[in-house]
Length: 397
Image 1 (cartoon, one colour):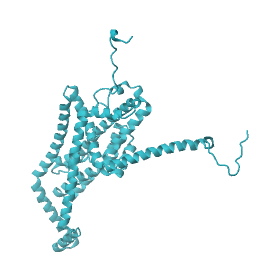
Image 2 (tube, rainbow, N blue to C red):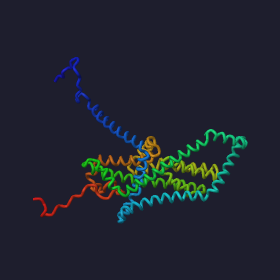
Image 3 (spheres, rainbow, N blue to C red):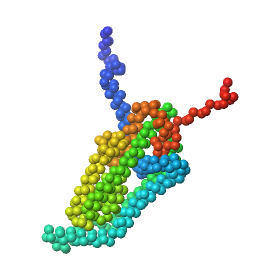
Image 4 (cartoon, one colour):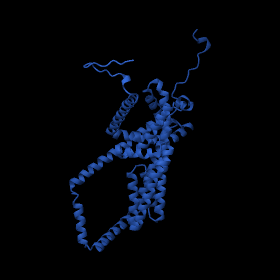
């Protein structure tokens, strides 16, 4: 009934009952959250250090999610595995090459007219500046020379710029080759790769991991489809607006917007600027301003309506989470972070919820789906099939 009082100098021993329950629960959550945050920080650090390797692999994963249904359809038509993967890759490369060739050929066909009109617009700009500000041609030319003189355009500058451009081009080319190489093996041998990954987990957790990854892979596939839809909407919207303004090169503008929409932020800015510049050169300041308004309206609809709502409903992530994921990805890893943030968040959202709800225990279809979904990484159930019973005369007695 009575607690013994501690004598002076006696060491204090803290018993679990002496800590309030709320503090114990908060402490238990706190150290677990710190452990999770530490693991996430280490993973992000390693990804940033190995970005030249990780980014092409992630691109290969997204392309595999995009081509997966097509390759699986060919396999169901009894097309050999290697031939189906080759056809899928050649289809992708051919489609991108055809779109790029279409843009380049259209621009080259009107290049002479574009140069002539650009020179005319530049002369008109100089005349406007001379009339508005009362400047002579000599003063304007000296101002232009003084402006460019601030950049110290010496031979060393051009050499350094060429070296930097060559290094960047080499990195991009290497990344593209590595992405295609990874895509080939994801399409060709994804089953064995996934079995190796699942084999790293404890045997009792493999069914849960396999089912959760299957659900996550289906979500990534939906993300790839929605991304194509969003890019198509951007291209059609800006292309129709350019057509309404009676601008030339409408088809190259639309194709450039479609391809640029797959590169977050930078792609939209570059392709939108291209449309505005063409409007300024061929039609004048007012149509260029109207073109700029149209580009901004389409991009705002895409960024604030299509991306959060359509993509959020397709990948089962709240629109606010989509916006925050893109912002956080851009803050942590720049442009690649904005590209991969949404599929990564969508995958882990479905992955964690699937395991937490224990769906793999009551979903036989998920157990038989194999590794990630119906895409290129699946070719049968992960769990081993039961062996048939031995004949009666060979059964152990």
